[in-house]
Image (cartoon, rainbow, N blue to C red):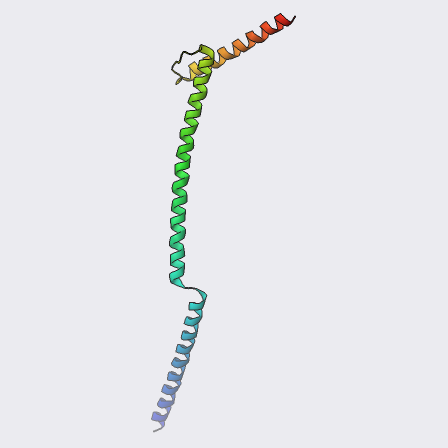
Length: 122
């Protein structure tokens, strides 16, 4: 009988311990629910991901547009220099040598014009 009583006490103690652990687990679970709602966090993460993707897409589009504008501006500047040097004749402005030649010719004409102004004012 002593064994039965001792075994029963151990079982009762074990049951009490398990009940206390379940109560603590339940309390912790409630506290975690109050701290953070996983569904809300997942929704926010999804929204942030969408925004990051849109931002990256727009950045890429802007880089492409800026590159295209840069090329157009460069072309118009080169074309303008060639028109200034060669009059209305449009030449192939794609080569760097021709563009440099046009710039050099414009510099020579400017220098010549300055020299002529100096001579006429003397």
